[in-house]
Image (cartoon, one colour):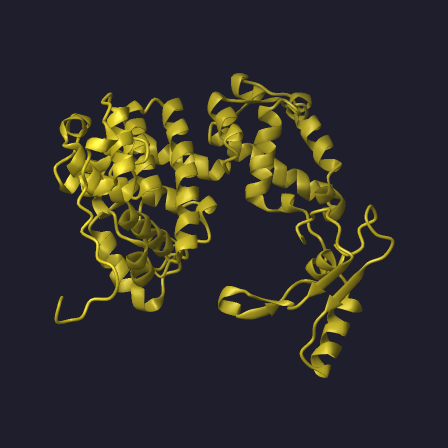
Length: 405
């Protein structure tokens, strides 16, 4: 409800005001968040008044909560445009969608933002925007009118016009940070035709969009380095020096990529938890972000005409979604067949669509269940009489003694 749902709620009870904050342990929530939760009580459309109750475990805690939240001042709100990834993404989108084109229009637009009101120093803001525009032109996402002229007057410079390139337009449509897009394009342009799955997984892991990355603990450094050494020759990004500030992030990106690679090699969630300390929810979140980043990578590969690489990315997306080795891709085309069933079928020599057609329905039913077996037989054009499939259950009821076992 604190997210802003407008529902009837006469009374809001806040039973706890602390939240786990990673390495910082349990921390008090911000005053703004407390006010947002308390403000759900007594919505104007539904009630004439509301009650917000905050539970304290002791008198001393009651006093602390009163001072912190009832008498406390809400935190300052800062414009997200001040964050460079947001600014360059927003700036590219404005030009790509033709909301603004000239330098004057760009500055006039940003002068009206909360960022400008908060920052106040428009000269400094203009310098920041100039730097962003220069980078977007350098990365080939924008074209400026002065690029096609030998001489540019001061008047033209002030009214410089920017247009989005096809690559820049697609990056804006993908809601991708231009810096991430630039790094991805540079990496795939270096590939010949194909790339190792680990190289692609590491490429998307070493992006701002994938953060927070899996953190490499001190005791894990040697293990991560040893595992990554197997794929060092395939990497599409250069490894920074051990003494560079970026090396820690690079290690974290390696760990994240190794976890995703273990997933597509059919390691289960228990293995990922024990080896990489990733919970199922965190694993699923990384897989979903990874799938989106692979899609954006494929779209960028299309624009730079890397067709062979697009095929590799398409296969990797299916593997990442399902957590399977490449050998199971043919079986995954069948509806209702996922990671577990495809592996059972493959290990029992049912490895292609032709094998599915030729398979004994009873054996197929024994492997993946009667209903699914009939369904996939129908998918390959074969109608099966359900009554003719006899499946040996081999199930026992009750508890067996050790002697009988």
